[in-house]
Length: 314
Image (cartoon, rainbow, N blue to C red; front, top):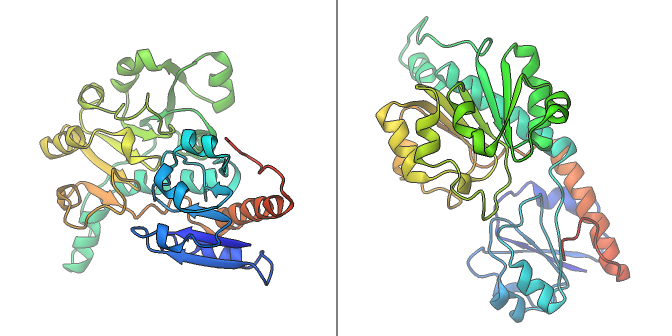
């Protein structure tokens, strides 16, 4: 079996999978800008923030596009279906969802405690500054109620926050399941945001959620609220976020995902003093990657037998 890693990002994935596959299986890595040149003899492709479109599918004879994680927005699902190519992912549950939840909490606390200024103070020989804000007593909004939000809710409760949620289908069942103090529909978003001190995005990226956190949404947030995004960059309107941060309406943003990845080091957003950025590492933990590698290995074995993959969308 010849397995192609599309792009050299997320390097910890390869040794995790190499432990599980057969000795005669081959793992190949291609540059993200020249995937087509590496497709000879490939049975399965694993894209890492790379576009797998119809033109690429026509250049190879691979039978499965296996996502290392949940997001499928980079894969032309329709084109794959037309060509009889299986597409599968690894749902964001278990250790992966919990890893994302942990990083979102890290970003939240780092923002509240003004981590960039604290680091600068240490390097300048300072002591006892800057002053921070407590998480306890704040209203935290989980936008999108799925596995990641569930992990967040479980971990945020001990911080004694007021926990609210926004989802397409709010109701008593969601309030009970997530332990929320209140739950709002997407149509009631502004009423929820008016109470929100920390907005954590947990929604998947789809056509209907692309740019959903726009200028109107950011204006609806309580002044000096914080935004945390470890879901997908496309959920947020870039220009609106930059404006809200530079004007001071938003106190800060913690970002692990971006509109184009990797984000350019010279991007003006990264120069803002109230932005904390990490390089798409929310789900990159030992336990998360072990769990994902096992799921991918199972689908390699299923492909070898000619069986449809688990968690297939085509």
